[in-house]
Image (tube, rainbow, N blue to C red):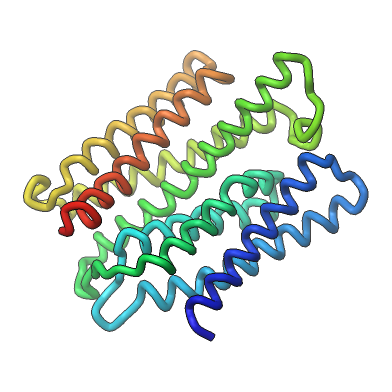
Length: 270
């Protein structure tokens, strides 16, 4: 089976899973809810399995790890979807897939349409490989947190207007949603801290390695998420303030990695 066939099958599975989530949310389906949830997760895992095979073929080679822009984007999407689906087995967060799964489908499509090469040598130090792993895990959890923040914002808006109808009825209570948000941010912040520490361990010349923008923006994002957690603990921040800080930190973090990678690889061709 060639890559195109596997990619199309993965995209169909992701979009079908997202479609079921949307149908459950907006049609407020109560009958056979448990069965529909199982089918939704099964389709998501099928898409993830196919996505895994694509990444294995595209990233691993005898020349090293191919982490070109669209490969890295696809890998980041895979990490986010993995975190979402595994967490959904024990927590009611599968509804985040309404946003996450279509984005993952787009990442798979872009990687198929625009293949490119940018190898990380197999001789790269273990600390660098650890840095990449920790970064991906941190991005995935903080991405889930940002989608959770968006869903929380919609839920808060409808509740303030005293119109808790539609898909709002099938969401967990506001306090539960908020607790899940800060749990994701807390773990993501810890992983981001470890990623930054491991990054500084191999960083020799920030300017020569064209990493100054990525490093500075990553540290700023780390400060934003750290400030949010501190504000939550000391001043009890929640609601709109928590949502704004979460989304601000996420945008800065995405610019740190994919913004700099986009400029270096696709614009400057470095």
